Length: 337
Image (tube, rainbow, N blue to C red):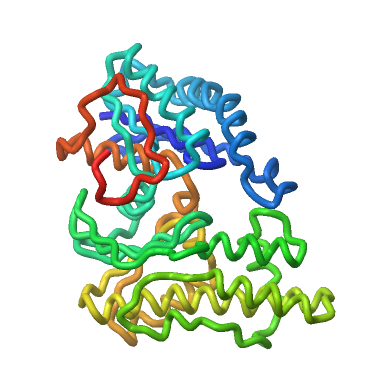
């Protein structure tokens, strides 16, 4: 069974083909990061225009490369939310058009659920139930995954996400968007000289995240200092230390409360080397198992959407109206489409 995945939730245009027996056949991602870097963040109108320019070309490219014809595809899965409405509608329109033309079932997929399921197409994957931390440029969410299609959100971002905080502080020290990887490179040359606040981590029964206070504190802190290159390195080091500490503390506290010793960390920030190293050092101490997706599956990608579509199909958890072009920009995990 071959599934076509389409992902256009933000500024990555991604197309993938997934085979339920062979796994990922192809997973192509066109990133617009270099386009939006000069604006310091994603500009929705520009993002949607670039999706429109690239999406058909990407589909034709993977069809040509794999020699798999569209009428051999069993399911089309597309990201219907959450995300930028102007970006989501591009993928939804293409998915539903192909569905109509080739009489293929079309399944709307929750982007966050796609990230959760990305761990299931990696080499090392957990058994149910497990705790998942989704951490990216747009989201920081803590979820208990009891089974396919069965989730419980135990923590959410009250304001800025972890990835957004990296980007905003990166912008203050003149690192172009997206700043996550650049912060990590700077951090390697820095020292942990600054003790930044993380007050929300003090409550062991609160699994929500708040980074706006940290962001404001650091911005005001920088304004009072003389900025040179070493100072930027030290800011990057302390910022990375603080954010990864907060993410790890929340995961460990969730494990202690719910007694689930399998933790997966997914999303763009999950590729952070310091985060991976620090939580892996705690495995023996707490007798926990840690899972990370393949780094190519950390960012927004269509392979995770295709796989989730396959799961929805075999569990009969699908949208019956294939001809309705509909998106849900604020779609939350657990809500019906």
